[in-house]
Length: 347
Image (cartoon, rainbow, N blue to C red; front, side, top):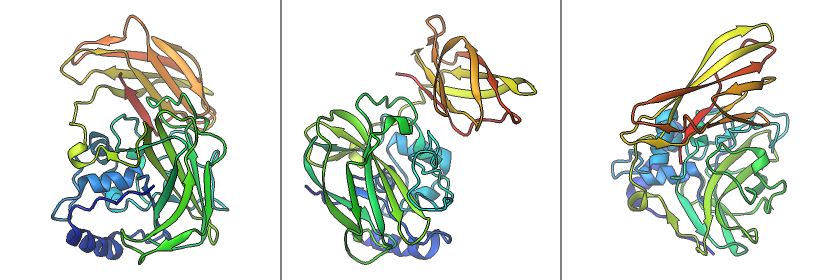
C-alpha cells in the first residue's frame, strides 16, 4: 500500500528544498529524516502550512499550537527531530524522557511543541493487519536501523505520550533499507514493506526510531494514525484541516513554599473560552528525583516522571474566564523548578 505525497506547488517545493539545504540545515547534525508514509507530525505540519511563496503558515490547530510554542524553525527543519547525546545510537526508554517522545528531547532545535496533547493532529487512515510500504525521508543518508513502535490498546490520547504507553517491541525493523532519489529533497526516501499490527482500532501513534550505525545520532518521530479500514488517506491537512478553535483549557504553575527536601506547588486552571468548560485534566513532567506526596482540590495520579490532576466534582465546571486551583506537596532533593512540560486538556 502506498500513497502519493501531496504536492501543492512543485516549483516552490524545489526552490524551498534548495533553500533549506543551504540555509536552515542543522550545522551539528549530519543525518536527517522523518516518516513521510505514514507522515510524522513535523512533516504533515510542514505540508499543511506550505504556501505559494514558500512560507509555512499552518492551518491545522495542533500545528498552529506547535508553532506558538516552538516557533516556525521546526517546520523548515521538519526532518531534524534528532538527538546525539547518548554514547550509542538508538536510545529509547530512560534516554528520551516521558512526555518528550515526539520531540525526541531534541538537542538541535526546539520541537517541544510537537509533544503537545491534541486530537487535531493530521492523521493517516490505515487498516489493522494490512501490508504497508513505509517511506522515510532521506534528507541526509547514513547507514542504520529503523524501528517502528505503536501505542498499546487503551492508550489515552488526552495525556502526554510515555514509554509505558508503547508496545515494548517494534512491529517493524529495517536495517539499511532500499533508498531512492537525491538526498536533501522530498523525492528522496528509504523504503521497506511492513505489516501493520493486528487487532488495532481507533487512534494510535506509530513511533519511529532511526538509529545510525556510524555515530550516536538518532532520529525520532510521532505519526498519528487511525485504524478505521483506511488505505493511507490523510486528513487534517489543508482543506481537510479542522477549523481553529479557542484554547479549551489553560494552566499556570507556581511554587508557593519550599523547604529543605521539598516544596508546595499550585496549578491554576483557567477557562479562556467564551462558553462553559466541564471537566479538565492538567499534566506535567516531574523533575529528576521529584515525587508528589499529597495533593488537594483534584485527583492525583503519577506514572514514572509524569503527574496529572483531574478535576474534582465541585470544581469541574468553569464558566468562561473563570479559574480554579489545585495544590500539592512534593519531595525534591534539589531546588524546585518550573516543570519542562505543562498541559491542560478538557474533553
